[in-house]
Amino acid sequence: MQKIIKVKNYDQLCAVAGKIIGAQMQEKKDSVLGLATGSTMLGVYKELISLYESGEIDFSYVKTFNLDEYLGLPGENPQSYSYYMESNFFNHINIKKENTYIPDGSASDGDEECRHYDDVIESLGRADIQLLGLGMDGHIGFNEPGECFIKDCHRVKLDESTIKANSRFFDDIKDVPKEALTIGVGAIMDAKTALLCVTGKGKSSILKSILEDDITPKIPGTILQLHNNLVVIADEEALSELLA
Ligand code: GLP
Image 1 (tube, rainbow, N blue to C red):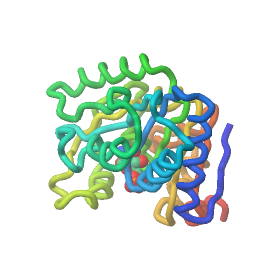
Image 2: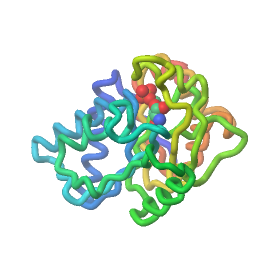
Image 3: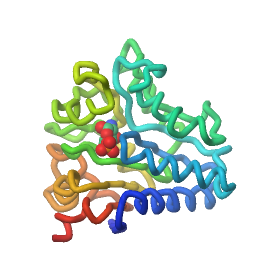
């Protein structure tokens, strides 16, 4: 099942995403949330923080796992996703740190860390909501275009286009890690709801492509067409090609 929620702009996207996640948490206080990073999520986290501050939601029993992490960046590195999550979200809500999981980018054995992370996800159970952004090359998490879909957590070489797109967060493009750890499409497809948030004109063509093209690992997001409950929140700019 697929539902597209069309919103006017980014602010509305964040408000709607916050409302959907908030409602899930009100219904089930020990919800499992799959979390994402990237600039799209910043406003969504702000929204959730404000729902928490106004007493509408409580994270005491919530558990979270993140999609991915750069390989080679320890959690204290400001460009790591671990640091991003702490500074933009976890430090502002009442979640227990021991209930939050992110792949360890400083692991000496990345493959071993992936096996461990799959065990973590299995022990948490299916995500009630898996929050997703969309990469310019159609990646979800860091599942990059390839010859096949990869079900489990894995180590991945980042595409040149992803390195370039993400270099805006680094002082120098040379500082962008070349590899990452990402959950596989298995855990994403297993989520009870996949909540894909897409904003801006720059994503309009890839959004159309993942929703309308044939399903192919060359455009990883196309697999979401098979998700049992895909909810897309997208603004007018992001939807401009899809609805044209
Ligand atoms: C990174 C993350 C993805 C995210 C993507 C989009 O590559 N690994 O999970 O979806 O960025 O980011 P943005 O929202 O900044 O466009």
